[in-house]
Length: 303
Length: 258
Image 1: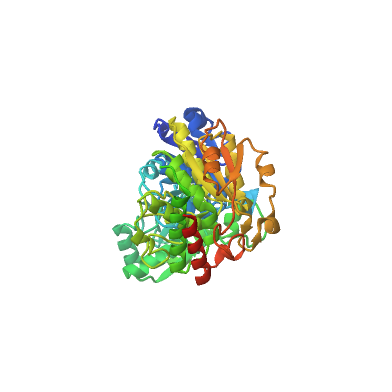
Image 2 (image 1 turned 90 degrees about the horizontal axis):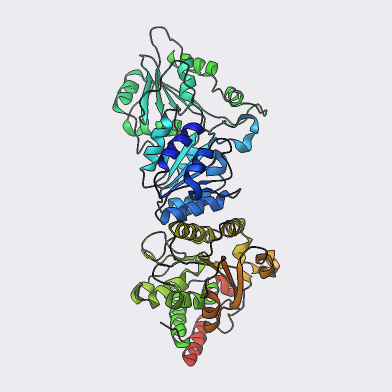
């Protein structure tokens, strides 16, 4: 999604107050943005704590501020700076974390971001975006850019099956209709899940994707609630640890709304169960997030 | 307004009384920093200039400085450190317009100031940014990250004041994690390095006021608990509140000096 991000931000760079800070990342991707912004493109070097707090200072002075790094260096290294300097003051700093989940694959666990949006959502006023498709990125840039508070944007790669078009952007979207179990996926994994959907007899699963969190700001739409009430079988899939994830949010929302389930399953990132490392696909399989595991989980919950 | 020693002593009495009545410690670092904060706000800062208190544990001195400017009432100072106050132990995030940022976790202020200074440079304005750090705070990696950034971007509109009182939470800076001589370390960066007695009003004026074509760092030689007998220069002054005898002795000395 870096190409789409760069295109969207180059368009935005016409704003004279826009500044973009990077922690020395973006080689062979963000050069057009650097050329467009000139001295408002600031490579802060390998110093993420300083970068985030400088961003807070710039935002306080009225600038339109974007901060970029790979996801773990963006949200984890500078957590206290995000908490104290950005969020305590409600400043509109947009944190762009590239390669959410296992996105950096065999680069190893220090480069993975398995708990990013859960951690960020503990902070006051934080809005999270997990764009699912390449086509979502421009919308997410526009929506977060219009926000007057802090945002974290987890970027991945588009995974839509060939010949499938991304639906018009919305925080919640139905990707496939059916009478079977309701499957809710966070972010890009929805594309792979769409390609893995089984046919469960006459009960085709219904697939939804969520791209904005928390539920308090972007609650599940009424038609999804009605569908869950009718079916009572839900599977949540996310490339994120269980704590603080969409599964936990959905469980709380179900309790608060009084909806009762017959069956529930949660597929999530489980860390490194095999204690081996590999590609994003390898780690997804290790956590039971690969297409076969997803298909099996949906079939099981449909029984 | 040109400050006199009597003006400083009035502020110092207010600071001592506020801390004594609230039974609050951290007074030592407030007393080492008060003179500089008073000179900055009364004499050196223009209307557009900004101040960041990176050593947030000197919030009391900051509140008293704002009181001396008529921006916080005397009545409000009595709420310091109490329930339902705006005057928390470290500067608050909201509620006092002059305080731009909540600080208190060391190692943040210099980056905040760098952001403001960069903003001013991008806009081409003449705004000066002042940032007051402690000396122990230079042990924070993030402070050094910030200094690298400040120098790389040539933020000459930024003046960094170091309250070099030599004592930190659990020992002297020399004992805990020494950077002494701090001037040798900082002179390796592309800064305009200056030094003065942080309790000499004229020296503060003469050292801090001049503009530079490089970021300015002023090492202020100060004494923790300055002006309080049996308290000044002692470790106890970092955390412990004043005893009644210490408070009375300090108030008496300040009255004599006024």
